[in-house]
Length: 113
Length: 109
Image (spheres, rainbow over the protein chains, first blue to last red):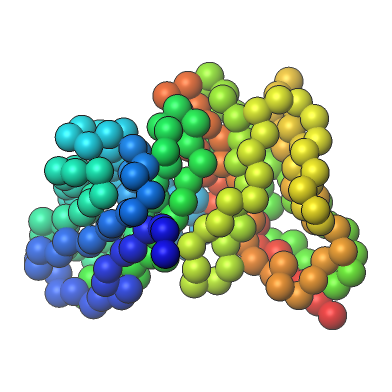
């Protein structure tokens, strides 16, 4: 089934631990994005990648890193998790970064304790 | 600055019509999206407007006025399954999306 797969679906993580959220798409989309969604706030962009081999910082990049080694995968790493990173994380992709019509993954619900 | 405003919550009756408004201030505006998000699920695409006017797609229509920085989503013949959050997002000069906080729509029988 074409789309975006995120893993894990949910996770409880101890503060200070390192965690990688996985995102894989099979649509051969050029652009990929990581958002966090918190109650009462709009989706906030963490990092993005317009094409394989390039990444950029979004609105809230601190504490997060990404890589884009190939077209399909765009993992998000929390180097040392803090409670303020408790959120729902969505990965998204679009076939053209200049005309973004996003497809979203089903999300990862992360709780940092 | 860049800003998107939409009501936090609205309530409507099954079978009725509801209009969800969105106002934006976006540098180098390049279009506006509406997404639907059911609780606990991912957002799904509803509409995209870049020119002024109304775009109709079945029971859902979306309107844009670039001069007023204003859009609305119109839902007709409301069904219980339309209970969801509706997210407005504008596209800026760098083709990045600026998201509103979403409008939670509650449908009552």
